[in-house]
Image (cartoon, rainbow, N blue to C red; front, side, top):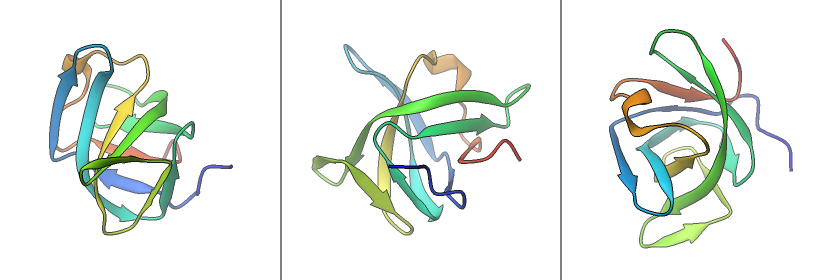
Length: 94
């Protein structure tokens, strides 16, 4: 699967799950996202490239999610203090 170039989500909440990692939660503004997609985190200092390790959509995990869905994205390799409410996760470096 390749990353949808239009994917964009504004972070509404951020937290850590022990053994899983940092979760950026919000509603997907546009596009679709898949587990394993490479994404950029914007809004804190400089953009940071990461990947989606897991998607939580509703009460279950999902392999993909799209515009309008409320999701939690586990972002690979980012400390919880690196992500802030209002940051944007996108498919492009902008």
